[in-house]
Length: 226
Image (cartoon, rainbow, N blue to C red; front, side, top):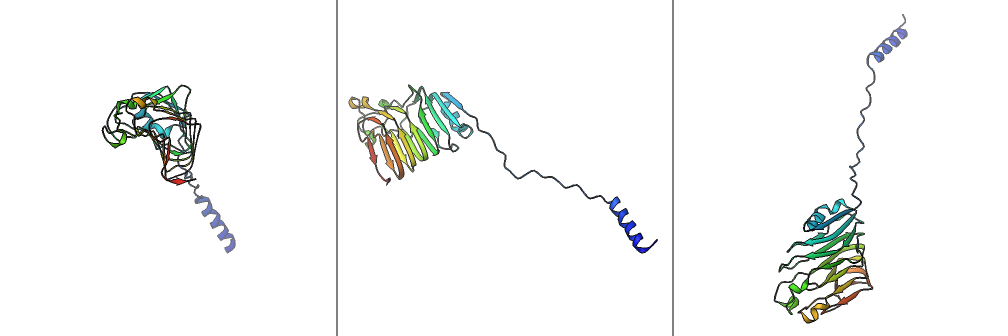
């Protein structure tokens, strides 16, 4: 056998005895995507706490006749972008002397609305003493609409806030349409400093079709740009 033939035979034997290992397949490095529930409905005395802990899991949050316990904020400030919030029936709050807020909503692309006949009723007369935020009982502010970007609030009916109703701060591109703030009962019952909208450090806030009945400013613009 020639040297060339010997080398070719040896190479063929080595290749047959040592097959090439199969490649190891590893999963693609994509994070797991968890689908949010389409709609979540919360109600009753535990509705506020359940909504707060579940807010990231729902694309639409329906608050139906929620009774928020005393000294508690209905806190929806940690939602995913483009979440919708719908208030149904009557939302109430228990009584406690504290600074509040009773309701807090933050986020990007958030859509807040009130269903037909729904209203938010903190029953502010329990705190009214004619002194507002200047003394007397410690009164919770009602609604912190803070850090809302490219968001909207539509057709909310708010009745009888302890003091200031809606605080808007750090907003950018917020549209409020058709909101009613009715503190008219405070005219003869000690309502004071029941401002409708207090706006600060915000850009591009539009309020249209609002009805405010109160014992102080309808709108107070403290800071911000047009």
